[in-house]
Length: 524
Image (cartoon, rainbow, N blue to C red):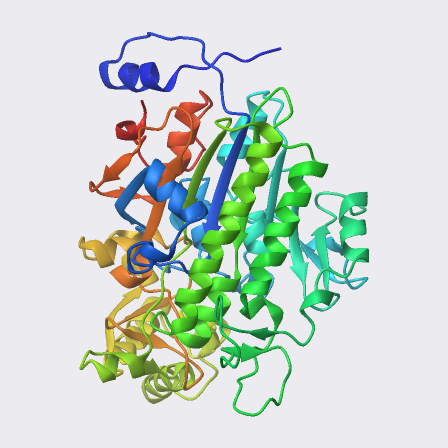
């Protein structure tokens, strides 16, 4: 039976005026949610003249937010992907990082690791992944719980990027397993891969890229590759894995098209959801930094792939029958080398030296012991057995650890769990971001924030992300589709606004942890 929805224009009016005006409208057949991993906002402007595909379509014909940001810390993959369709901050969603130390299990866990699940389609016996650690609902979950006949699929190279956007009730989430070279899923969703995924795997999806070089797009003969999938080539860096090249994104786009056709997305009585996360931009960005020519190249290639996917969707569901939204899970810092060349600040902080400095301070104050049980993501988790053995007050130990952290070079701020639990964190943007990233049952005891352009790194090259600063939290937010008013929007917005806006458009309950606003300004 056909569901009635409030037309976007009247929805916006009723939301603003409080009236109950409503009108039956044809809803989009498919919601396409695109996350481009580590895609800074300025990639939409710096490389704009080179975009002629899907990004160009969204930038020219859609609603473009110039000041969309994440309001939480840390700005990392799992947290970003969990925010997009839940609208929740880590303080509510429970997804506080890519991984963290689980005090109950006494081990490190990932945002989607699940001892009760098994990997399906990959190496036998390997533990699987699931959304069970996500404490809130997503827009896709709310569609399902509202009784809409929605089919929901998530796709990425990374398990967390495939799983977290679509939430608990998805029909399937698929990610690429480098060990087997297969697309895989988890027993959380199914005991066997669908036949179409098995057929895709049987065709060896990575086979055509064996020995390939990543050459500049439309390179002339004799051009030097950015890197090669063959190790040991003279004067050519080794790419490391297919994920760190544009070929990884090609695998994702091919998988998305296969899911579109084989799952008949957009052809059901309800609105279906396809969430696709392009991961290779992140792998390349970590290795090379945002100013390397290869980042421009992979960004242009992403635009081309998005155009290909959008064309396939239009062919499947008909032009004008898709509502698309695109964002990124975080940005990235410039490399310290690039910063030094332009007389800007920045550098790398040695995580082991940082942790050792805290241990040394605690040894001096309370006596020698194993004071740190984990420094996952450079957040200090104290060993409470040692605290008890030394008959020390845990709060006093936390303060001492924080004092030691504050004097470490290039640490801007340090927060204890006591300050965050009691609301004593500063109320500026950085303090608020740390507070919104804190979830008591999972978060650590001492949280450091580096100075701008400084970051924790175990290596001497490349770059990373996670800070509450603009280069890490400023991301694109683009909307395109029926009912969306095109234009450039300079007002502030957050990625948390995506979920409640989708919920309003489709007249379903706002996701349970959402803290965003409805983007009324883009609704016709």
